[in-house]
Length: 293
Image (cartoon, rainbow, N blue to C red; front, top):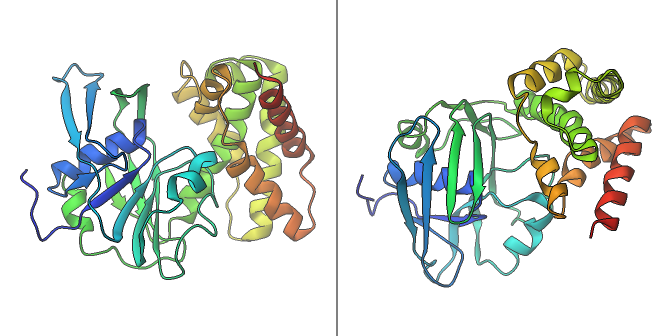
């Protein structure tokens, strides 16, 4: 589709796997998409079902205030990615990241922060990215509210995209799955399905899930719990996969532990609760990262 001058220009902060996928969907919907690099960037998207590869050219961002921004970088790099960006006071931000709280204090007070939760999966490294699974995606604000005017245009070209008002339940479900699966598979360097096969890992996963349910139930008495079963279902569905944290740890990169389990610990501290399983695993991941070559 040819971009229309009436549609907002989206700036992309974080052109990794998920950022690249979002850029393709936005471009398909006719939205202009620009990168944050000083020179144009070409991306290639390949497909598990052997569709023909597609290319996307991301021109350098024009001068002027940014009114629409996709933040898809890894959470440890959020501050660096947004540093000195000329954000408009009412900038609309799509946050396509794991964990919670990664943009706290980094956006203007009038920003419209729209959270994105997806079960799609993309692998690869710049400039080639491989779409492994094209599943459901939800957008919504933590405080609820209706979809913005451009949403229906995007949803017509983003497979499985829905507006969720509120989105918190889906955010918390994904957070718990990440808080259990990611650090365990990273520390033990195993695929996701190993959590269902190794009795010790199964027990540790249950402990982490139960603690998360206790905290989230304290934050919201309406929380339905059941995280043991939900995490097991995710591990079973992605049994052969390498979690993002395992991949980060394998290459000695910074992990997203602070935005995932760390967020749970910060909420627990605020409520005067102790989460020993999460406290221990955050310390273990920090130690691993600090001693990585």
